[in-house]
Amino acid sequence: MSEHKIFSMAFAKVYPAYVNKAERKGHSKEEVDQIICWLTGYDQAGLEAVISAEKDFRAFFDEAPCLNPNIVLIKGVVCGVRVEDVEDPLMQKIRYLDKLIDELARGKAMEKILRS
Picture 1 (cartoon, one colour):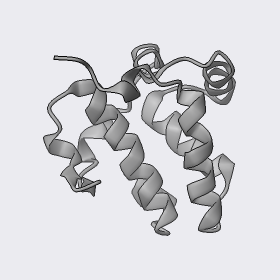
Picture 2 (cartoon, rainbow, N blue to C red; picture 1 turned 45 degrees about the horizontal axis):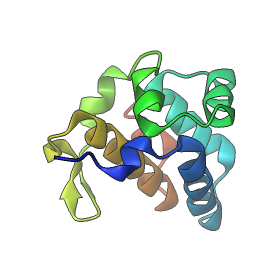
Picture 3 (tube, rainbow, N blue to C red; picture 1 turned 90 degrees about the horizontal axis):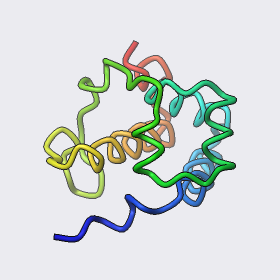
C-alpha cells in the first residue's frame, strides 16, 4: 500500500495555508506558531528552521522535540473524520494540527485550544 502524498509534502508548503486560514478569521501568524509549538515542542527558532529547510511532514513530526502529552485531549472531526479514530500515527498528528488550526479559525479561546 502506498503512503499518503501529504507525508512527503513539505511542511513549508502547507504552513502558509494554516496562517492564511487564521488571518482570514482575524487571528495572527503568531497564534498559529504558538499552536504548532505547543503541539510539537519546537521553539520559534526550531519552527522557522524546519520551514526554511522545507522538511516534509514525516520529518517535521519525527524530528519534533516532544509532542505535547495533552495531545490525547484533542478530539473532534476534521474533513469528516474523527481525529481520535485515525489509525495511521503520522496522519493522526497531521489531523491533530488541522483540528487545532480549525479551532483557532472558529474563534475558540487559546486556553481551550491548548488544552490548558
